[in-house]
Image (cartoon, rainbow, N blue to C red):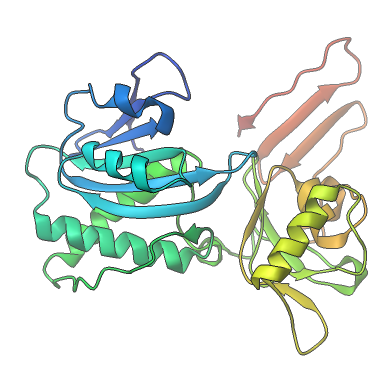
Length: 304
């Protein structure tokens, strides 16, 4: 049985996308989410000048991480002032700061090096760290570093940022696939975002009806994130995130597609559709319900 986790979030300026602090019950670490335009306001918070590590995040127009930078700080938010002057790409910082003196300087250096390594391994984002720390993690510190990083990874996920390699989360039960046009592409869907997985084949012979996906295809080709394999098929070298199953299938197959029926599980089943009401259901997650017998539509998420 999964263990419940309790998080307390404070919205410091009363806005859901403003400055917020997050704390897990019994943790020795506090997380601060700081939008770049509110950096000067964040400096007024008590406890935000403690040591720890931070992620600088660049989000695109779809609120997806495009780039990240990971660093350490001995004086909390003050370190971000340097990056505010020297780094243009980021628009949000997420800081993981120790309470009092619970993190030694060796611990922070080890945690920074560990987090950067995991970010590269995830193959989800462009990591802006030009130099990887040469810090050698002491074997006695490693268990604590791994424990703290697991908490960081969990809190990042609650903010919509998955840090593990998509392949690590795969199993036969939650993987979807499409084989249209002779290609094989794989993905996972969590009810909000659809991930097309590294190694998926892309059918480039057919343009996508939505032009932004054609532009994205070309950029990935130019960057080496889509490569031509020896068998003549184009394959993804990274994991891509889309806002819907249809956006994902459009990108993979070309043209205009219905992702709700295109992606299938291992048993060949798609998202189900009821005749009296449109019910999009996958793996116990009621994603969309529109009652065709009522004048008003209801759209909601529900975990069963």
